[in-house]
Image (cartoon, rainbow, N blue to C red; front, side):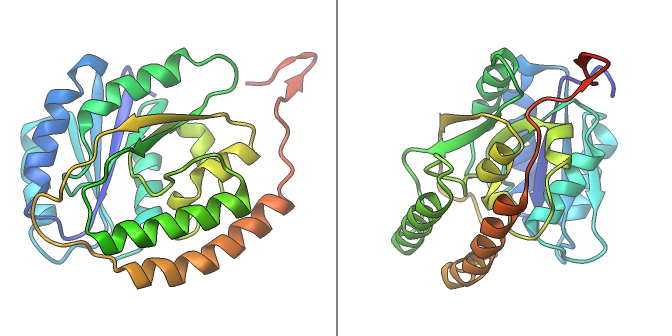
Length: 246
């Protein structure tokens, strides 16, 4: 790794209206956590998203752009960004402007100061600015997931999270995994810190996902995660010659 303390990974698809403003806000509000980088992952956009981000990256070395040659889904886009990240700690947020980057320095500090195994710090949106239909669908999905998995996280769909890069890369990757990170991290011995974050109305454009689409895919994902967590037996600590293994 480099001397970069944190990598902010932002996965986007057709967000040309928002990315410049979001990038500027991240650069401003991440100043307390410097030095940092922003890794944008363009998941096969068909608008000017990539061109706008490339222009910013050409002017600012803190900004990087990684591109998929086709749409692969948000989970794979996040993984691509984490793989490209140069820092030991990664922070994620969505690229539509609904998340406040000002929450990230506090979340990173909570992660850095936590004792024991490196935690997952999960953003919890206390007051959401979404249409009623999405709020209802999300509440139902969160309730079902929480009862089945017992992950102790009331809002796994929030895109604002902080975690150790190496811990994330040990997790199984599948589309939809970003909605189940608390359960997956817990299975590998990482504690959860729920952290209240701000949530705002979308800046411009429309969501690329529908409530029914999320729900139908989420059911299959939930079944898969149940199988994964039941079949995964990971040690909480590993030693070599009587000492903690690196």
